[in-house]
Image (cartoon, rainbow, N blue to C red; front, side, top):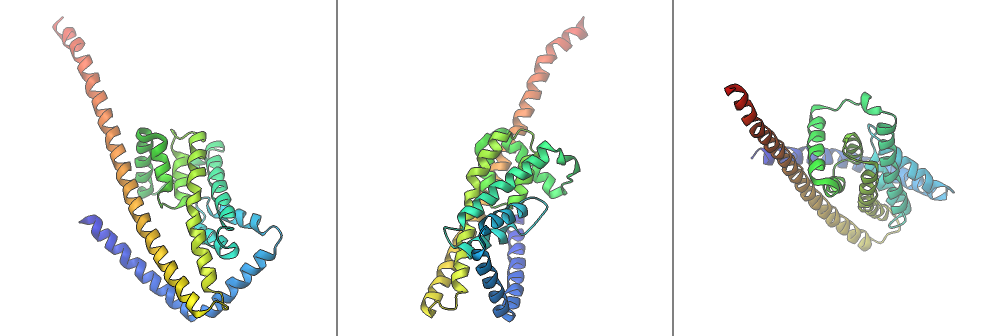
Amino acid sequence: MHSRKKFFKVAVITCIVAAILYGLFSHYKEDIIEFIQETAIKMREQKYSSLIMVFIVAITGIPPLFGYTFAVTMTGFVYGFPNGCIPATAGAFLSSLVTFGLIRKFNFEKHIKLSEKKQDLYVAMQDAITQGGFKMMLLIRICPLPWQLTNLVLSLVPSVTWKTYISSALIACFKFNLDVWVGSQLANLSDPDLPPEAHKATLIYMCLGIIVLLSSGYWLYKLTMVKVKEQQEKLLLSEGDERQSLLENQAPSLTGLYVK
């Protein structure tokens, strides 16, 4: 019941924010589209624009910076699909490496203070990875949590090695190709030369795709959180069994000492 109320609250807030953004976009639609199109054209004309986009994606993927999702989506808007997949994937992978290096190699974890909510998530992920290993870590990576947050949390977990961190990041960063596709569809919608029929078909196709992505993302997030909780409970149960076994082994010697 509590989870339903929370989901309903988040859904209402999301709808309100979406309505406000839609209103602002409708009012400044022409100016926004013109600015984005001019920026995209200039980016395409630049000789090393793809490297610049890799750098932008990588920088925004390092916590506590923001704008990562927008940067990844822009790669699809500028270069289309699948051309935008290369800078998006490379930037995502590079951001994970930089985050891990800053935290592990330069001991930045001493200066990081997590909020209570993020601290609970960190403890849960740490316990889940301890029990589930690489598979659990990969599931957390694929889960639609913010990329900056997973980079941060996984870099802080002591049991995560450099090898497993790189492997999971390399596999999971390809999930952002979906955001690149969304960006490419937005580029098609903003094309003034697109016929009205093609415009409607693209809009319907994109809306259906986004609904499917959001639904599957929510399902994957819930599945990941359930698995994290299960692994955490298993770890607590195993620790309890070890303590009980230790007490049972010590009991005879203590009894004999008392009788003697």
